Image 1 (cartoon, rainbow, N blue to C red):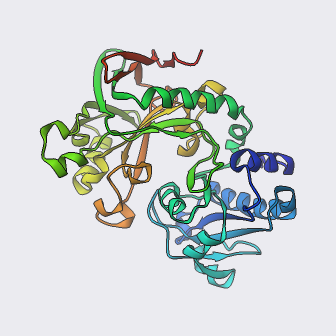
Image 2 (image 1 turned 135 degrees about the horizontal axis):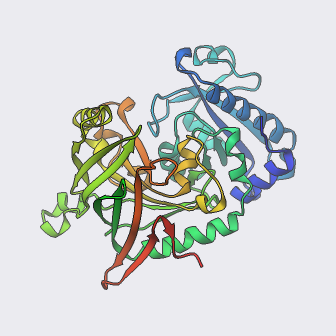
Length: 390
């Protein structure tokens, strides 16, 4: 199994967190399957990585100025970005195979206590903890690197030049912050064009550059994207002013298992799904069952594809490779759609669709253009490639 050695781990934590004198405790979060039938080889590998990091970093904690390193395990929550359970288990020995054995393997501890105890958190979990940890970080002032779906195949993404990654992400933020809208052209099978306009008013972009030096911040690792939540129309619900209706609209094509599914977007929400295949049927039923799933939750600009990295079928890395659009929950990014808009915790979702040739080969991106309030336009992506990083 490809692993970081101790010097690479120390360097990574120092680069990501820049630990200071007040950073004394590192917590590593890992989820365990409630049902053994849901387990997988990648999930098992991830748990092994988490346990090895606890032991390796724990033996060298002093080199980072740390006093303690804990491994906190909890039953899986069943979906990405759903709220965490109330309690976890502090496991000092071997991790059990399933959540049923946690009570006999560790000390039960409320998550509120975990968040108060730890100044630094790593979360190599099966189901993403980004949303709940972003919200908790603001309250408890810890820093967290969330690593949903992390496997050893991602380790090369921890060895790249994050100074250059950070430079590119900042350039994107400087373009997105003043932008009023993004115009995206999609070309399917080199002949059918679809267009989307994303309303970026009332929003600022977020950096995910792999650096979390300040308390109160949580984000993904590996990192390498700048993202923004399209305006969701929350001001209109308060004012009733037609000018405050979200202008996000158009036709959004998505390739799912080789099938092209087209979402009709109005006022930042998917309102219909076209397509005759099985994927279209599934998406249509999902949207009817959970209207909040159709929320346009994120416009993301990943940059890691330019560093020679390729998809590994894990969203944590794959979304950082290029342009992507997310459906569903947005409150953890400063948006308006949270868990209360879904029918149950198990239905809460934030799902990225990544527009690169390896993940959606039938769809090309001829152009992504940002327009500012003065009417000036900047083509950010042309023929699938960034044109702004010279």
